[in-house]
Length: 274
Ligand SMILES: [Zn+2]
Ligand SMILES: [Zn+2]
Image (cartoon, rainbow, N blue to C red; front, side, top):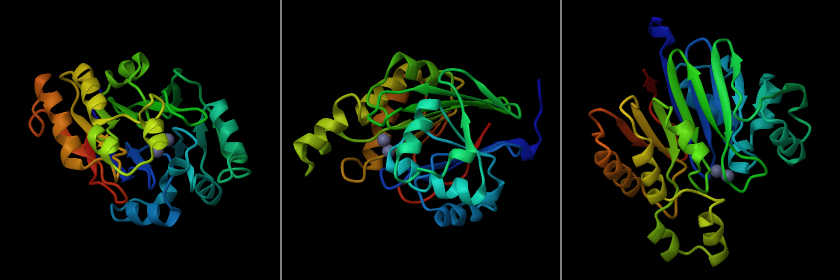
């Protein structure tokens, strides 16, 4: 068995999660990754500095899809810091057409293929397709330092593919976007409600919890709920819905699994993924 020293422990920080901007940091000390860049470069820099991390240490950026809350500052970051941007060919095409990334990524473009692991300094990265209304949409399955991490955000429905990659994770970041009653009884126009809940939008707390019931296994050590809606959800409801599902599956949050909601518009604590 490989033994990693303290420096090599896998660290995860959500720098922001939700429709106001998404950006996640993941590192094993050798390879540091940013997933999505929907917040300002200065904000990301400031939030990472609070953890003693310099934004220039990032090795690469992964992109889930071409919605503005995930790519708003991707172009400026890639250009300014000259960092490679990894995405599938079709997502790169969408990025080259999008007004916030147009003309900014070309020199830093790196192509990865759906459901095919790409290796970067012993870190394996596998994008997998998810149903959502971006031009091209992915979750990520990442293997580093003996730990398996899956990130699933902006997903309209839990497909077999989502279940497959989420079920392999020791640490799972999973969308829990809205509470059905809050969405239906809230102020959103009918068309927007339909867009969110039609299977190509976002996952409700209930859908997410149902999936978690199927996904949970004893090697899963954390479940971090992401992309919570500001208007149609609150962390207490999302937490308790997921918690009930974990309890039915035999896991006790806080005891044999970490269960937390990732904050909107602020960074999370630093998680150590062992
Ligand atoms: Zn989003
Ligand atoms: Zn989206």
